Image (cartoon, rainbow, N blue to C red; front, side, top):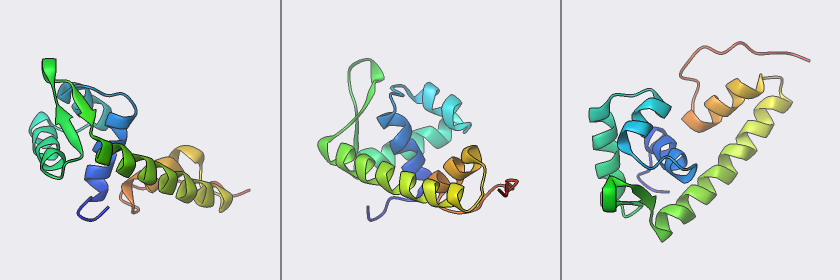
Length: 109
């Protein structure tokens, strides 16, 4: 996953989860449309995403492989964080972001 930043990883996972249009990505990820445009262009340049008929986004074979590996990594990190007492919703966000970028209350058991 060389060159795939945590931010680009979020886009890749969202597309893998079925988000097909740029406006949907902006809404899902709570980012601006210009940010989506830049990210999609970078993912296209990396050979991970294509934009086809009707401006629908799709993963390439390489993008699907990267997204599968990324999803597996995210799930592993998420399970570890939950096992350490973090709330599942926070663990998911933290695992996807790749770092603690937003305050998140930790729930201890």
